[in-house]
Image (tube, rainbow, N blue to C red):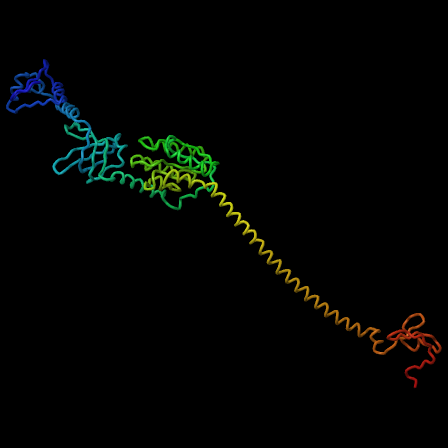
Length: 430
């Protein structure tokens, strides 16, 4: 095409609307003064599309041509503005307007493109939108098809996080009372992470140093990207079906907000909460808190910290055993002390009772001895009395047992005397 003052010449043997598209797409300027339009028509002829009433183009042809020209002239670009008139259609598409102080632009986000956008924007939010400028041919309206959307600051990310957190909290998944205690000495730990990530190497190094006897089973899953949430959920489901783990760790190393966002996915958080065994979430660095951290039974700042919290070291076990041994010895000594005290008290009481009993018996025996001594013939003899015995050794207690001239023995205090009865006098005789 060559430029002339007041007219333009198209070098084509069969002028058509397609040729106009090619001219516009090649970014060649077509400058036509309004007063010279009829001269162009004279050159191209009345058969040129739109050059005469007879060759008028249809509305759909014109809008489609404009659509091709506009979409061919602009590459995808970022546009900044304020969101207004946001509407979410029942088919899943989003419609809104981007405006500034003097202009506005209709925008659409197809449902297939919403996976990369954390949450729907709010009216009044300042955003930057990446998309393709085009024309909605059915209405002849220019629109901007958005593929990515970023709010100033972290507005969209924070909104998506708060919405998911609110739903989890309403279902009771963030309640402190549902947190479970970790097993003190796990034998087998499942680690849901990327098999090629640095987090796995860190956990392996810690476990080899602290607890070489603990078995580590890796459930591989992508930890970032669009497929990461589904892969993490699938890995957790495999671990649950297996049922051989005493403890589950889910996590990855540090990264940007976008890298860690899979662990803020509500589906992953619910899968962690539904795990039948205790869980540790170890995502990112200490300043990063994800939804998985909130629903897990324990949150660790890093994967290495999760491995340290999962099982005690051999030194800690030895120290714990030593403490338990001391407590056991003290407990046994305490259990034995009470029986010992009771036995000592009982022995003391028995000794006192025995002494008291012996004393009482001795006193009674002494009384009996005194009585026996008072009744003893020997005691009588000690007092100056004598006992007469017959020749047969029997005691003679009556004069009827004596006869004059009869022999008898007289028992005295210090011996016996053989005697003969010279005379027997009854007690009534003078």
